[in-house]
Image (cartoon, one colour):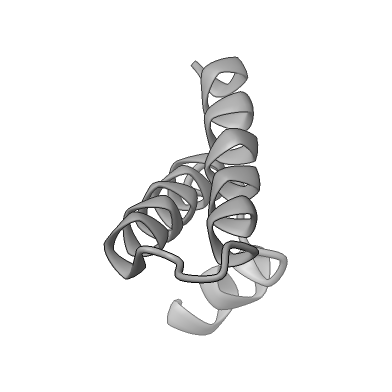
Length: 61
């Protein structure tokens, strides 16, 4: 599933930058592209463990 999020995020980022370069960019299209990009980032980083996960487990005990 991760392989599908990376191209979608790349396309959304490129589309947002392209829309921004127009003389009169559509704000709603840019907002939608940013939302898609942020959602993809959220899904990709959801499974990455925290750097301090071991430390926080020791503090709880």
